[in-house]
Amino acid sequence: MKRIGRALYLILAFVLLYLPIVYLAYFSFSSGKDMVRFQHFSWVHYQVLWSDKELLAIFLQTIILAILSSLIATAIGTCGAWGIFRLRGYRRKTMLVLNNVLMVAPDVIIGASFLICFTALGIGLGFFSVLLSHIAFSIPIVVLMVLPRLQDLDLTLIDAAQDLGAGRGVIFNQIVLPEIMPGILSGLFMALTYSLDDFAVTFFVTGNGFKTLSVEIYSRARQGINLEINALSTVMLLVVMLLAGGYLFLTRQHELALGARS
Amino acid sequence: MKIIELKHVTRQYPDGFTALHDLNLSLESGKFYSLLGPSGSGKTTILRLIAGFDQPTQGEILFNGRKINDLPAAQRPLNTVFQNYALFPHLNVFENIAFGLKVKKVPADQIQVKVDRMLSLVRLEGFGQRSVQELSGGQQQRVAIARALVNQPKVLLLDESLSALDKKLRKTMQFELRSIQKQLGITFIFVTHDQEEALAMSDEIFVLNEGRLQQSGSPSAIYDEPVNEFVARFIGDSNLLMGHMIRDFEVEFDNHRFECADAGIKPGEQVQVLLRPEDLSLVAPQQGKIVVEVLSQLFLGDHYEIWAKDDAGFNWLIHTVEKAPTKRCGLHFAPDAIHVMRLGESESEFDQRLSQYEDNEK
Image 1: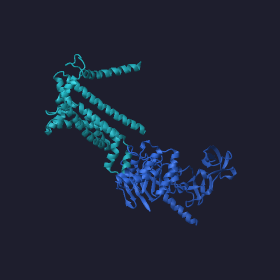
Image 2: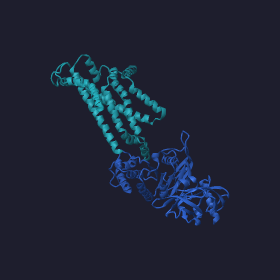
Image 3: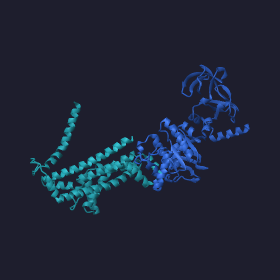
Image 4: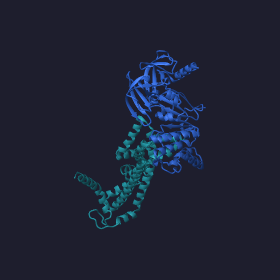
């Protein structure tokens, strides 16, 4: 009885969470112009979306931005994690706290501070400023994903590599990097999704020439209901679900490998 | 020829803990050495100093007469087999063994030849493409040995390398290690807390305790003539009693006087006496030197382990191949079964005294 109750509660919670999304996606297939009544099934909004060259350009820009910023953030974050890992005592704690503060700080504050910073430095608002801020807010999450894998690293492996004549570069590239790769990949995926769905920070630092999807959807949604947005949101939802699935698959693979090891 | 020397080496940690106190060691080329001691005795510290993973706070480490204190581990002509093997988990057996050669940019065809030769030396032919994670403990051990030896080191360091294996496999690996060492003729330095292992494999043993060298010598010298109570207790079973010297070649303990083989000690000086359990035998009460009462006896397959108590209340440990004949029996031992140790005598003082009275005998 208790188990059934718990299952019902879970189902209810998930229904409540997913209902708005499903509702939105459902109407993207309606031939009507509003979300009052589902007319009949059609791809019409997707066709409009496909022919909306401006929106597609923004979609592409968003993806390029996400890939570029997450790759750069992963490279910097991995080096940062290695640096923090090699620190000891209070220095390490300080660095970790500084890293975590960036994680929990409200996006609005981060966005506003970037805006102030960019204007003060005279950096024009556009693709470059958005890229810089996306890289910046993705680094802490990469650090957090990579650091635990470094802590699990068997330090005698490094001794052994040294013993066999390997220098620092070889040790990092051939011993450390393969061992922490799962952490780096999780960091990359997290950075990718962070960049894709960020609204608050981007809203602050974007200028006239450059828009991301979330900002565009926001401005269009304010102009009234348009089921093209529903179609676009459904597409994005699919992209994010694929990413999450890929991430899950990779971590599962790694756990299986770990299981085989022990 | 001396290959490695440690001169007045001290290793103190920033928190004040001293792992090694003014240690002097000298190792000759081509021999099998063991560093033997309980955990915390400093034996692994010595290994890490020689390998270059750690630096002494004082003193010198010499390799072929050249000071190597500041030479990085990567440039030292020696290799290590780690306690947990430290095989690279993402590389297969071949790549693990080839790692050191690849780092040194050896051509691929030569790497192939050398790795194959190593695989056959450690009897793992055909295992090259296996993942190291699917190997058994003994096989991983062999890969670790091959990975170290393929670099043709002058010295091979082994850190508790057999302790993770089960007893039977350990015995096999002891034989194999010894035969590999004989075959290649390079110096092995083996760190262990297992006295049997050290006795079975070594040309020379260094016994360590609390960061100080207690005694060094061949396995039989250390077993038969331990310099102090620590060495006596650590290596083999022993019966230890307090007593005092009467004169040269006569010692009193357990309320009796006995003829012994030791000399060069002042009459009346308090000493400690060691009798190994296997040097004792049980005879009829009137034939023995001491009368004892048997408390318990255990049959251990190849011998009996007997506990017996004498009239003075001392509990004797006796190893014999035959059962105790009666409940009360005599304890017999030869004069040279008694090993007399002076309290607080260092190894060098001991050696000096030994050579002195042995000269007098001639």
